[in-house]
Amino acid sequence: MNYKTRFAAFFSVMILFNLAANFAHPVTPTVIQELGLNDYMFGVALAAMMLTNFLLSPFWGKINSYISSKTSMLICCCGYGVAQIWFAYAQTELMIILARMFAGLFTGGVFVSFLTYVVSVARPEDQGKYLTYTATIKSVAGAFGYLVGGFLGEISVRLSFLAQAGLLITVAVLFFFICQPDSTTSLKEISAGQLVREANPFQAFIDSRKFMTVAFALLFAVNIFTNFGNTGFDQAFNYYLKDELGLTSSYNGIVKALVGFISFAANMTICIWIINHTKMRRSLMAVVLVCSLSALGVTVFSNIALFVLFSVVVYAGYSVSVPVLQSMVASQARPAEKNLVMGFFNATQSLGSIAGSLTAGFIYSVHVKLPFICTFVVYGLGVLAAAAYMGVKKRK
Figure 1 (cartoon, one colour):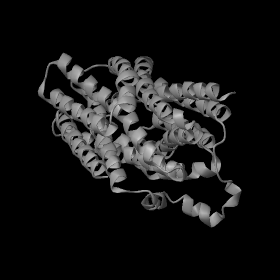
Figure 2 (cartoon, rainbow, N blue to C red; figure 1 turned 90 degrees about the vertical axis):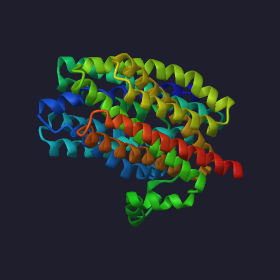
Figure 3 (tube, rainbow, N blue to C red; figure 1 turned 120 degrees about the vertical axis):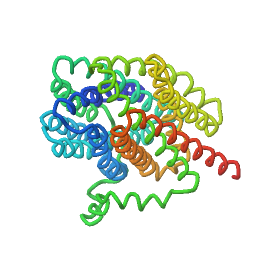
Figure 4 (cartoon, one colour; figure 1 turned 120 degrees about the horizontal axis):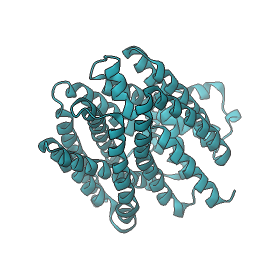
């Protein structure tokens, strides 16, 4: 395959992966309620997965230099599929938490490998565009994954999980045969001791000192706050539809499909315009501010139509912010450190998601609107971090 055909195939399979990765989300509230588990489990379950995702993301970013991104995709998609089969048959809180932690070992590897593959293989002039495609596919295909999973859940909750596992294992093989090798060092060239050190997830965080600057730290802070806000909002929104409004999984899927359409339109127009024609640091602050104010709207208005409208704006704003942030981070990373930087970027996404899902799960039990208030506050902190980043860049 030539360069363009290979990337077209890569993005096509990425669409299938992101569809599959979201089949289980709309039925998870149903699983929690049918098993009679505590309400906070909707947040704890995701946080368990994000914890291991967070710990292993920098490791996958580093190990891809030795085994190639496509090998990591093969391993991680298969591992994720097995984890979802475990989740499908889990009956207790402990088993669900363990299944989600097992899934997190691999989910970080998939998303990091997408980023490392693009920054390693794409031509410099295509890198920003392809990173935008990656982020757009994640949000848009993910939204339609909700739709498919929601309707599968109407037939059988377990069917959503089993269909997910089957498709994840299928795309694992497709990625391996479509992608070209991008490793820079042979695994045979490193000693067993060095490999053990590379496998230490905390070492990767220590190694971030090689590239960390005040500007990078502020960008990663924005990443943490936006993912805290988005994940907490998303988890509370999904559970609110089932718990408070009594809607089935298919309605959740329909709403997320609407989000997908709007996010796609926003990413293909607003996002690309921001990256190509504006100072991204200013635009980033504006987008995060829109998310914060929209979350306030969700909190204030009780009308269902306005609740959904403001929720869609929160989702769309987040989907625009991701490729903008990715492009800003990737453009500042030195070539030799890009894998490590993108692994760290994914890790900070997970860190925000852990905090967001745990916080939403526990404060939802206090009052159902508290997670949305929290989203407003956390996105506000993201605005402050983005403003501080602007100040640092102006001084330079």
